Image (cartoon, rainbow, N blue to C red):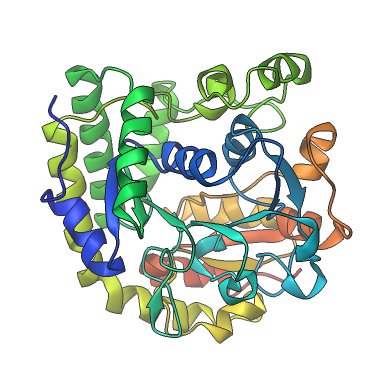
Length: 378
Protein backbone atom coordinates (compact mmCIF):
# COMPACT_ATOMS: atom_id res chain seq x y z
CA UNK A 1 0.00 0.00 0.00
CA UNK A 2 1.55 3.27 -1.11
CA UNK A 3 1.77 6.32 1.13
CA UNK A 4 -0.41 9.34 0.31
CA UNK A 5 1.17 12.49 -1.07
CA UNK A 6 0.26 16.17 -0.94
CA UNK A 7 -1.37 15.82 -4.39
CA UNK A 8 -3.93 13.28 -3.17
CA UNK A 9 -7.47 14.72 -3.33
CA UNK A 10 -8.22 14.46 0.41
CA UNK A 11 -5.01 16.20 1.43
CA UNK A 12 -5.44 18.79 -1.29
CA UNK A 13 -9.04 19.65 -0.28
CA UNK A 14 -8.22 20.19 3.40
CA UNK A 15 -5.08 22.14 2.46
CA UNK A 16 -7.15 24.42 0.23
CA UNK A 17 -9.70 24.99 2.99
CA UNK A 18 -7.16 25.72 5.73
CA UNK A 19 -4.22 27.18 3.80
CA UNK A 20 -2.05 24.76 5.77
CA UNK A 21 0.22 21.80 5.16
CA UNK A 22 -1.71 18.58 5.64
CA UNK A 23 -0.95 15.00 6.57
CA UNK A 24 -3.33 12.13 5.80
CA UNK A 25 -3.88 9.66 8.65
CA UNK A 26 -5.86 6.47 9.25
CA UNK A 27 -7.83 8.22 12.02
CA UNK A 28 -8.44 11.46 13.85
CA UNK A 29 -7.26 9.66 17.00
CA UNK A 30 -3.76 9.12 15.70
CA UNK A 31 -3.60 12.76 14.60
CA UNK A 32 -4.52 14.05 18.07
CA UNK A 33 -1.81 11.94 19.70
CA UNK A 34 0.80 13.06 17.17
CA UNK A 35 -0.07 16.73 17.71
CA UNK A 36 -0.08 16.47 21.51
CA UNK A 37 3.21 14.56 21.50
CA UNK A 38 4.84 16.96 19.04
CA UNK A 39 3.97 20.29 20.67
CA UNK A 40 3.65 19.36 24.35
CA UNK A 41 6.20 18.08 26.85
CA UNK A 42 5.41 15.21 29.22
CA UNK A 43 4.31 16.55 32.56
CA UNK A 44 2.59 19.63 31.14
CA UNK A 45 -0.97 20.46 32.12
CA UNK A 46 -3.59 20.35 29.37
CA UNK A 47 -6.96 22.08 29.67
CA UNK A 48 -9.71 20.04 28.04
CA UNK A 49 -13.49 19.72 27.96
CA UNK A 50 -15.06 17.25 30.40
CA UNK A 51 -17.18 15.72 27.61
CA UNK A 52 -15.95 14.09 24.42
CA UNK A 53 -15.23 10.60 23.13
CA UNK A 54 -13.70 8.45 25.89
CA UNK A 55 -10.58 7.61 23.88
CA UNK A 56 -9.51 11.27 23.78
CA UNK A 57 -8.66 11.13 27.48
CA UNK A 58 -6.36 8.16 26.90
CA UNK A 59 -4.59 9.94 24.04
CA UNK A 60 -3.82 12.82 26.40
CA UNK A 61 -2.51 10.39 29.03
CA UNK A 62 -0.45 8.53 26.41
CA UNK A 63 1.28 11.81 25.50
CA UNK A 64 2.33 12.11 29.15
CA UNK A 65 0.11 15.12 29.90
CA UNK A 66 -2.02 15.88 32.94
CA UNK A 67 -5.66 16.45 31.97
CA UNK A 68 -7.10 19.56 33.63
CA UNK A 69 -10.87 19.31 33.27
CA UNK A 70 -12.52 22.60 32.39
CA UNK A 71 -15.90 23.82 33.56
CA UNK A 72 -18.46 23.33 30.81
CA UNK A 73 -20.75 25.95 29.29
CA UNK A 74 -24.45 25.10 29.52
CA UNK A 75 -25.01 27.08 26.33
CA UNK A 76 -22.94 24.98 23.94
CA UNK A 77 -21.25 22.09 25.79
CA UNK A 78 -17.76 23.50 25.26
CA UNK A 79 -15.17 24.97 27.63
CA UNK A 80 -16.57 27.85 29.70
CA UNK A 81 -13.69 30.29 29.26
CA UNK A 82 -15.21 32.79 31.71
CA UNK A 83 -14.42 30.36 34.56
CA UNK A 84 -10.98 29.11 33.48
CA UNK A 85 -7.63 30.17 34.93
CA UNK A 86 -5.38 29.84 31.89
CA UNK A 87 -2.36 30.74 34.00
CA UNK A 88 -2.54 27.26 35.53
CA UNK A 89 -2.24 25.32 32.27
CA UNK A 90 0.34 24.95 29.52
CA UNK A 91 -1.84 23.87 26.62
CA UNK A 92 -5.47 23.60 25.50
CA UNK A 93 -7.32 20.95 23.52
CA UNK A 94 -10.60 22.19 22.07
CA UNK A 95 -13.54 19.89 21.25
CA UNK A 96 -15.94 22.09 19.22
CA UNK A 97 -18.73 19.79 20.32
CA UNK A 98 -21.15 18.86 17.50
CA UNK A 99 -19.58 21.64 15.40
CA UNK A 100 -20.32 24.47 17.85
CA UNK A 101 -17.05 26.44 18.08
CA UNK A 102 -14.93 26.74 21.18
CA UNK A 103 -13.84 30.28 22.08
CA UNK A 104 -10.52 29.86 20.27
CA UNK A 105 -9.54 33.53 20.52
CA UNK A 106 -9.44 33.22 24.32
CA UNK A 107 -6.55 30.73 24.16
CA UNK A 108 -4.00 33.01 22.47
CA UNK A 109 -0.54 32.46 23.90
CA UNK A 110 -1.14 28.83 24.83
CA UNK A 111 -0.25 25.72 22.88
CA UNK A 112 -3.55 25.11 21.14
CA UNK A 113 -4.52 21.80 19.53
CA UNK A 114 -7.92 21.94 17.81
CA UNK A 115 -9.97 18.77 17.57
CA UNK A 116 -12.17 19.66 14.61
CA UNK A 117 -13.64 16.18 14.11
CA UNK A 118 -17.13 17.66 14.50
CA UNK A 119 -16.28 21.04 13.00
CA UNK A 120 -14.99 20.49 9.48
CA UNK A 121 -17.43 23.12 8.16
CA UNK A 122 -17.36 25.55 11.10
CA UNK A 123 -15.80 29.00 10.91
CA UNK A 124 -15.09 31.75 13.44
CA UNK A 125 -15.15 35.29 12.03
CA UNK A 126 -14.97 33.77 8.55
CA UNK A 127 -11.88 31.69 9.34
CA UNK A 128 -12.06 27.89 9.37
CA UNK A 129 -11.57 26.08 12.63
CA UNK A 130 -8.37 24.08 12.51
CA UNK A 131 -6.35 27.19 11.60
CA UNK A 132 -6.16 28.96 14.99
CA UNK A 133 -3.81 26.64 16.87
CA UNK A 134 -0.54 24.88 16.24
CA UNK A 135 -2.53 22.01 14.74
CA UNK A 136 -6.05 21.19 13.60
CA UNK A 137 -7.10 17.54 13.46
CA UNK A 138 -9.98 16.68 11.12
CA UNK A 139 -12.03 13.49 10.84
CA UNK A 140 -13.13 11.92 7.56
CA UNK A 141 -15.66 9.70 9.33
CA UNK A 142 -17.84 12.55 10.65
CA UNK A 143 -19.01 15.15 8.09
CA UNK A 144 -17.89 13.08 5.06
CA UNK A 145 -19.09 9.78 6.56
CA UNK A 146 -16.13 7.89 5.09
CA UNK A 147 -15.91 5.41 7.97
CA UNK A 148 -12.25 6.14 8.70
CA UNK A 149 -9.47 8.61 8.09
CA UNK A 150 -8.15 11.85 9.51
CA UNK A 151 -6.14 14.85 8.40
CA UNK A 152 -3.65 16.83 10.48
CA UNK A 153 -3.24 20.46 9.36
CA UNK A 154 -0.16 22.45 10.46
CA UNK A 155 1.35 25.81 9.60
CA UNK A 156 5.04 24.95 9.14
CA UNK A 157 6.67 22.54 6.70
CA UNK A 158 9.23 21.55 9.32
CA UNK A 159 6.44 20.37 11.63
CA UNK A 160 4.81 18.45 8.77
CA UNK A 161 8.06 16.58 8.11
CA UNK A 162 8.55 15.68 11.77
CA UNK A 163 4.92 14.58 12.12
CA UNK A 164 5.13 12.48 8.95
CA UNK A 165 8.10 10.63 10.41
CA UNK A 166 6.30 10.15 13.73
CA UNK A 167 3.18 8.89 11.93
CA UNK A 168 5.15 6.36 9.89
CA UNK A 169 6.79 5.01 13.04
CA UNK A 170 3.37 4.25 14.55
CA UNK A 171 1.55 2.87 11.51
CA UNK A 172 0.67 -0.82 11.43
CA UNK A 173 0.26 -2.93 8.28
CA UNK A 174 -3.14 -2.67 6.64
CA UNK A 175 -5.16 -5.55 5.21
CA UNK A 176 -7.08 -5.42 1.93
CA UNK A 177 -9.87 -7.64 3.26
CA UNK A 178 -10.44 -5.36 6.25
CA UNK A 179 -10.36 -2.33 3.98
CA UNK A 180 -12.95 -3.82 1.62
CA UNK A 181 -15.22 -4.66 4.56
CA UNK A 182 -14.88 -1.15 6.04
CA UNK A 183 -15.69 0.58 2.76
CA UNK A 184 -18.61 -1.75 2.03
CA UNK A 185 -20.01 -1.22 5.55
CA UNK A 186 -19.78 2.54 5.22
CA UNK A 187 -21.47 2.45 1.82
CA UNK A 188 -24.27 0.34 3.28
CA UNK A 189 -24.78 2.80 6.15
CA UNK A 190 -24.95 5.74 3.76
CA UNK A 191 -27.46 3.91 1.55
CA UNK A 192 -29.62 2.98 4.55
CA UNK A 193 -29.73 6.63 5.64
CA UNK A 194 -30.49 7.92 2.16
CA UNK A 195 -33.22 5.36 1.45
CA UNK A 196 -34.77 5.47 4.93
CA UNK A 197 -33.83 1.85 5.61
CA UNK A 198 -32.28 2.45 9.02
CA UNK A 199 -34.73 0.27 10.96
CA UNK A 200 -34.15 -2.92 8.93
CA UNK A 201 -30.42 -2.19 8.87
CA UNK A 202 -30.39 -1.93 12.67
CA UNK A 203 -32.31 -5.17 13.07
CA UNK A 204 -29.91 -6.96 10.74
CA UNK A 205 -26.77 -5.64 12.47
CA UNK A 206 -28.12 -6.74 15.85
CA UNK A 207 -29.14 -10.13 14.49
CA UNK A 208 -25.60 -10.63 13.13
CA UNK A 209 -23.98 -9.45 16.38
CA UNK A 210 -22.28 -6.51 14.68
CA UNK A 211 -22.89 -4.07 17.56
CA UNK A 212 -20.17 -4.07 20.20
CA UNK A 213 -21.40 -5.04 23.65
CA UNK A 214 -21.24 -2.44 26.39
CA UNK A 215 -21.56 -2.49 30.16
CA UNK A 216 -21.39 0.83 31.95
CA UNK A 217 -18.84 3.16 30.40
CA UNK A 218 -18.13 2.72 26.70
CA UNK A 219 -14.46 1.97 27.47
CA UNK A 220 -13.88 0.22 30.81
CA UNK A 221 -11.24 2.16 32.76
CA UNK A 222 -9.32 -0.81 34.27
CA UNK A 223 -7.31 1.51 36.57
CA UNK A 224 -4.61 -1.00 37.56
CA UNK A 225 -3.78 -1.73 33.93
CA UNK A 226 -3.93 1.98 33.15
CA UNK A 227 -1.44 2.72 35.94
CA UNK A 228 0.95 0.21 34.36
CA UNK A 229 0.55 1.84 30.94
CA UNK A 230 1.24 5.26 32.48
CA UNK A 231 4.75 4.11 33.39
CA UNK A 232 5.55 3.92 29.66
CA UNK A 233 4.52 7.44 28.62
CA UNK A 234 4.98 9.12 26.23
CA UNK A 235 4.25 6.03 24.17
CA UNK A 236 1.04 5.23 22.33
CA UNK A 237 1.04 1.41 21.88
CA UNK A 238 0.62 0.64 25.63
CA UNK A 239 -2.66 2.59 25.46
CA UNK A 240 -4.05 0.70 22.46
CA UNK A 241 -6.46 -1.37 24.62
CA UNK A 242 -8.29 1.87 25.48
CA UNK A 243 -7.76 3.96 22.35
CA UNK A 244 -8.84 1.24 19.87
CA UNK A 245 -12.39 1.09 21.28
CA UNK A 246 -14.75 0.86 18.26
CA UNK A 247 -11.98 1.54 15.72
CA UNK A 248 -9.58 -1.33 16.17
CA UNK A 249 -7.45 -0.42 13.14
CA UNK A 250 -6.97 3.25 14.08
CA UNK A 251 -3.22 2.94 13.34
CA UNK A 252 -3.47 0.71 10.26
CA UNK A 253 -2.20 1.94 6.89
CA UNK A 254 -4.96 2.70 4.41
CA UNK A 255 -4.57 1.64 0.80
CA UNK A 256 -5.79 3.06 -2.49
CA UNK A 257 -9.36 1.79 -2.05
CA UNK A 258 -9.89 3.55 1.30
CA UNK A 259 -8.27 6.75 0.05
CA UNK A 260 -10.48 6.72 -3.07
CA UNK A 261 -13.58 6.32 -0.90
CA UNK A 262 -12.48 9.04 1.53
CA UNK A 263 -11.95 11.41 -1.39
CA UNK A 264 -15.34 10.53 -2.88
CA UNK A 265 -17.14 11.15 0.42
CA UNK A 266 -15.26 14.38 1.14
CA UNK A 267 -16.19 15.75 -2.29
CA UNK A 268 -19.89 15.43 -1.35
CA UNK A 269 -19.63 17.64 1.76
CA UNK A 270 -20.03 21.05 0.02
CA UNK A 271 -23.14 19.86 -1.82
CA UNK A 272 -24.77 18.95 1.51
CA UNK A 273 -24.16 22.37 3.04
CA UNK A 274 -27.49 23.99 2.13
CA UNK A 275 -29.53 21.05 3.42
CA UNK A 276 -27.50 20.96 6.63
CA UNK A 277 -27.94 24.71 7.21
CA UNK A 278 -31.69 24.44 6.63
CA UNK A 279 -31.87 21.61 9.17
CA UNK A 280 -29.93 23.63 11.76
CA UNK A 281 -32.38 26.52 11.41
CA UNK A 282 -35.44 24.26 11.73
CA UNK A 283 -34.07 22.49 14.78
CA UNK A 284 -33.06 25.82 16.36
CA UNK A 285 -36.76 26.68 16.62
CA UNK A 286 -37.37 23.89 19.11
CA UNK A 287 -37.64 24.91 22.78
CA UNK A 288 -35.27 22.08 23.75
CA UNK A 289 -32.36 23.23 21.55
CA UNK A 290 -29.12 24.19 23.30
CA UNK A 291 -29.01 27.98 23.53
CA UNK A 292 -25.65 28.20 21.78
CA UNK A 293 -27.11 26.78 18.57
CA UNK A 294 -29.13 29.96 18.04
CA UNK A 295 -25.83 31.90 17.94
CA UNK A 296 -24.57 29.71 15.08
CA UNK A 297 -27.39 29.60 12.52
CA UNK A 298 -24.90 30.29 9.72
CA UNK A 299 -22.87 27.16 10.56
CA UNK A 300 -23.61 23.77 8.93
CA UNK A 301 -23.27 21.90 12.22
CA UNK A 302 -22.41 18.22 12.37
CA UNK A 303 -25.17 17.65 14.91
CA UNK A 304 -27.66 19.94 16.66
CA UNK A 305 -27.74 19.28 20.41
CA UNK A 306 -31.12 19.29 22.08
CA UNK A 307 -31.37 19.09 25.88
CA UNK A 308 -34.33 16.90 26.71
CA UNK A 309 -35.92 15.59 29.88
CA UNK A 310 -36.21 11.86 29.10
CA UNK A 311 -33.43 11.19 26.63
CA UNK A 312 -33.66 7.39 26.64
CA UNK A 313 -37.33 7.51 25.70
CA UNK A 314 -36.53 10.06 22.97
CA UNK A 315 -33.80 7.82 21.52
CA UNK A 316 -36.17 4.85 21.42
CA UNK A 317 -38.91 6.91 19.75
CA UNK A 318 -36.49 8.22 17.12
CA UNK A 319 -35.22 4.72 16.40
CA UNK A 320 -38.77 3.52 15.78
CA UNK A 321 -38.98 6.27 13.18
CA UNK A 322 -35.74 5.14 11.54
CA UNK A 323 -33.42 7.74 13.10
CA UNK A 324 -30.33 6.51 14.95
CA UNK A 325 -28.85 8.70 17.66
CA UNK A 326 -25.07 8.56 17.88
CA UNK A 327 -22.29 10.61 19.46
CA UNK A 328 -23.63 10.35 22.98
CA UNK A 329 -20.87 10.81 25.52
CA UNK A 330 -20.35 9.25 28.92
CA UNK A 331 -20.44 11.29 32.13
CA UNK A 332 -17.53 13.72 32.55
CA UNK A 333 -13.90 12.64 32.52
CA UNK A 334 -13.36 13.70 36.13
CA UNK A 335 -16.16 11.35 37.21
CA UNK A 336 -14.94 8.60 34.91
CA UNK A 337 -11.22 8.78 35.76
CA UNK A 338 -10.89 10.91 38.89
CA UNK A 339 -7.44 9.59 39.82
CA UNK A 340 -6.00 10.51 36.42
CA UNK A 341 -7.36 14.06 36.08
CA UNK A 342 -7.51 17.42 37.83
CA UNK A 343 -11.24 17.90 38.44
CA UNK A 344 -13.44 20.68 37.15
CA UNK A 345 -14.22 23.41 39.69
CA UNK A 346 -17.91 22.94 38.81
CA UNK A 347 -18.85 19.49 37.46
CA UNK A 348 -22.63 20.00 37.56
CA UNK A 349 -23.13 21.48 34.05
CA UNK A 350 -21.11 18.67 32.45
CA UNK A 351 -23.09 16.01 34.29
CA UNK A 352 -26.30 17.69 33.18
CA UNK A 353 -25.18 17.77 29.54
CA UNK A 354 -24.04 14.15 29.62
CA UNK A 355 -27.47 13.13 30.94
CA UNK A 356 -29.68 15.25 28.67
CA UNK A 357 -27.88 16.02 25.38
CA UNK A 358 -29.61 14.55 22.33
CA UNK A 359 -27.57 15.20 19.15
CA UNK A 360 -29.68 15.34 15.98
CA UNK A 361 -28.35 15.18 12.42
CA UNK A 362 -29.63 18.35 10.71
CA UNK A 363 -29.51 16.65 7.30
CA UNK A 364 -32.39 14.42 8.46
CA UNK A 365 -34.22 17.05 10.51
CA UNK A 366 -37.52 16.55 8.66
CA UNK A 367 -37.49 12.84 9.52
CA UNK A 368 -36.91 13.60 13.22
CA UNK A 369 -39.15 16.61 13.83
CA UNK A 370 -42.46 14.76 14.46
CA UNK A 371 -40.79 13.18 17.50
CA UNK A 372 -38.65 16.15 18.53
CA UNK A 373 -41.58 18.58 18.70
CA UNK A 374 -43.14 16.47 21.45
CA UNK A 375 -40.06 16.35 23.69
CA UNK A 376 -39.92 18.24 26.97
CA UNK A 377 -36.83 20.42 27.52
CA UNK A 378 -34.52 19.35 30.35
